[in-house]
Image 1 (cartoon, helix red, strand yellow):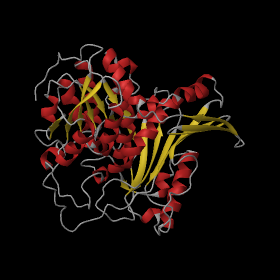
Image 2: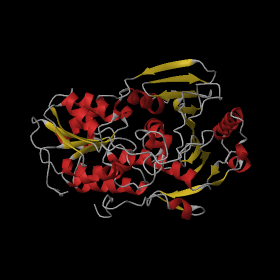
Image 3: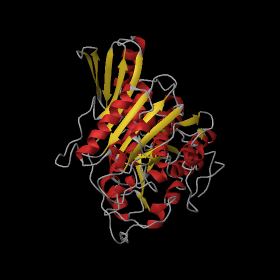
Length: 461
């Protein structure tokens, strides 16, 4: 793979030639959107699964090039920009390699699989003067500007006192095999793994369920948590809080007894130095006989800003403000940012201005950082104790703990006996983005992964 730091997209009226790294379900949605934008040419498709590139070519450009190895696509001088929609563990390395080759990048969320490689991706974008948009598409929803005006300019609900973030969505067990899953011969498994370690796959399905393996995914916190936490950073904090000052979290993978590693019950407290935040997350139904999530305050996937004069509830595509008596004050309606986010990327590529991106790589890194830190709180945790968890004096935190206690009880589990983990109160240095103080040695181990050569995020980009 060659490095071409001088390469740059040329004439404003030329077609922008796109290459797609990853051709699965989310990539298909991107292809559908980008193919409708004027002046965008679907040029090449890359995936270690040959059936996926063939399908993409059939649907979007019969003359398009097919690649199994993303390095060959990146070296293709007929491509101006790439869309990275591969598995999480590939996001940063694919983006860095592409920017080193002079290409602009639209990279799916979460930006990084570990905090260190996100910082390296920012360095690459700045060094090579590349446009790098992260796929938290709700940033392009015009509704967000209306919400910020309502909360911060008009101060319609008064001072924001605290916030709660929710991600409650039912999923199923991914199974636990007694023998490793056979890899389909049409998949180049070495290229699919890339930076990840080669380990036996003990789940039942190859695709998608990689999300629940820390070797390749970031769990529900990185899958959906990044969207709702990004909304929080955008609308409640106006992006003024890059990372929390302290983090305290617990959770576990319970009930299913499957091959997954990531928690299906996860709860985290973020001390921002101003507005305290808590997130509750679970993939379990309310009880074994239900197919619905437990009832909670606010939207199942969204956030609540608790204010002096009421509360604001936000979620993808809509929001609502209530007074202290629960009376609806105002509704907000949006379009979720779909299509507009991809259009924003193309506009920035043509203008050569990262400043007009709605989710520049730095913004995407900061929002992903909350998720990375939340996952580290779980990964570095010790045995859970409800009394220890209650050491945080925050009403919303104690409400979430109570809800999690009740949820586990509905599944015939005692929260103190459910094999959950609980972290120390972890202090974060905002400059180094590393943990300091008690528990830091264990936590810092998860800030950077061990890469599998030759798929290594470089120390010097």
